[in-house]
Length: 492
Image (cartoon, rainbow, N blue to C red; front, side, top):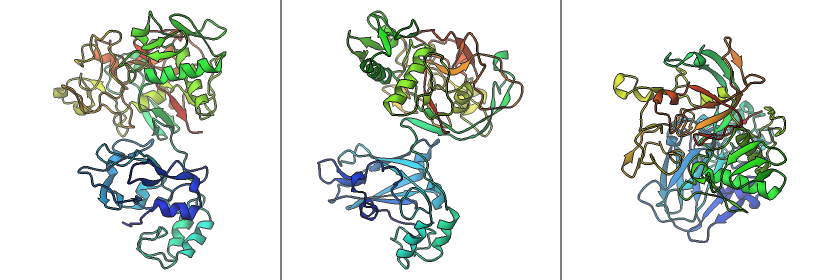
């Protein structure tokens, strides 16, 4: 194991990039930290130790001072870190051995509630061999190593972890020449890496529409951790309203401007179902439903949201909202394909299995569904018999106790919540029969009557319907208070 310390203050001097270094907050002590770096410039975190320094001595909290989580990573990666606190700084150290552990991975660092320093977040990306912090390993990194030749442990240029910068560190640069830092994952999403999986009813407990089980290869993609919430959709609606010519609003619904294509129900007659309110000039959300999943949205309304979200973040648009075709070659937001949705729902990518129905006592263990893992009809959660849909907040089944109701962690292997229950989720595909041969990046039939919905909902009285393999279809204009969606982004 090799330990190199990264002083963010020193990086600022070295990179000459004061525009992305700032003192965050007015309260003392303040963290001298990085904001997201400019294009082509990354903080240097090629080791598995990061040292954050402060401008004054800090108060030592009783618990862990910082939260460190992968951005777009997989399950339990946040457990890779231990934190120690000294009067002048905080050290983060990877639990497992080896610098490759952090290579090319984005992490978000934020204070915990008991760490009383002004609010801050730091996004850091690792790139082994990038000695000059350019975001790419080039021959210029040889020059950087040479300039620090002979320095000892605290030097950030000890790329091979021997405790001293020597000519041997050249080999690390040489080994990684040409590598670029990956793009930062979109906010609120996780990366599902490229690879094969077995799609369909691997437990043989469903119906013929879930067969045959077949091999699917998917390129890497990002998918939302949570279902799109009422607040997120209302924000996008207000953006669309402000840009003119995108939507038409009536007292109880939103349509595509210039057409009768329905996007969603809302307003006085439907706000209890959809969660979206309309004042006559502004969209809002029913009180206490801000973090509940969006409902009463059609496939068209889900697709329109994907384009609005892309435009709000200056990403390319995937959908043509007149032909309803999708350009899968651009990295804008879109609905996940049915295959992408099912792979993201997997709890065990090695055995390629998914959540199934059954009591824990029947021997199927943690892959079983019950009312403490998913929101379905009569599951027992405290939101049942609410006014409107009996949805739970997104991510509710996270293994914590909410009031008197104890949940079990139903996060999928890749880090998604509510893949079983809560609301049915629109997928991109037309509904059709499964292929009988191996597939690569399938996007469904070219045409059809119904679009795919997956995952089950709060109203399903039969928990079999909230299994990950279960398939359902609805006309693309369908607006029901059992249906919502989440977004996906490709990585072309």
